[in-house]
Image 1 (tube, rainbow, N blue to C red):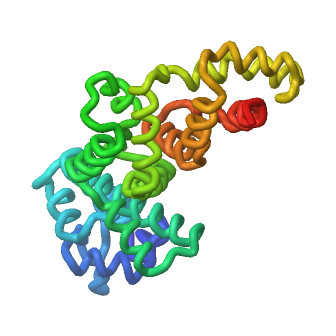
Image 2 (cartoon, rainbow, N blue to C red):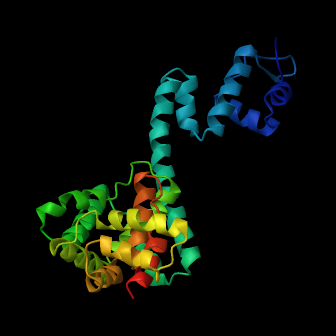
Length: 279
C-alpha cells in the first residue's frame, strides 16, 4: 500500500509539516513518487514514522533517533542510557523541589535559602562527614554510646523521595545547631552519671498506664510511680529539662522519615505528666 504525506499524518497523528520535516531529513524516505512528482510511502515508512514519534515523545534527539532507525544501535541500549540520565535529572529535580518547598513553608531569607540548597546538594561523603561531626561533638568519645550513635545516624537512600530530602535538609540544620548539640551532650553526660540508656523507655512504660487510667500527677498513685523510677525528684527535673526540648523529638521524627522507619511515638504527654508529678 502507498501513502501520501497527508495519509501518514492522519494515521500517525502528526502534522503534515512534521511528516515532511522527517522525510526531508531522510528519516522517513519515500519509496517512490507518483506521476505528479509527489512523494509516496510504504508500510515500512509508516512503521518507521510511528517509531520516530514514540522516540521523540520519550525525549530522544534526532541524531540518536537516526542511529536507531538506521539499525546502528539497539533501542534497548539507548533506553538504558536514557534511564540513567533521567535518574540523575529526577534526583536533581527532587532536590530542587525539596529546597523550594522548605523555603516556601518557612518564608526563608536569601541566606537560609542558600544554606538549605547547599545542604541538599551534599554528596554522600559530605553528608556522612557532617553527621559524624555532629554525633562526635554531641556524644563525645564514649564507646558505650556507640549503639546510640548508630540509631541516630540518618541514611539518605540513593534515590530519595521528596519527603526524605526535605527531612534531610531540616535534620542537617538541627545537626549544626549548637544549642541542640549541647542538649545531646547533657543527655550523654546524664547517662554517664547514672541514668540508664533506656531510662526514657522506662519512664514511658511506667507513666503511660497512669495516663490511660486517668491518674492525676498530684495523686498518691502518681507519687508511687515517681518513686518507682528510682531517681530523686531533683535528678528527674534535671533530666526533664533536657529531654523535653522539642528539638530532640523533632530530630527523631525526621530521622524516621529519612531512614524509612515507622514514626516514633511522642513522649510529650508522658514527659508533661512526669514534670507535673515532680514539680
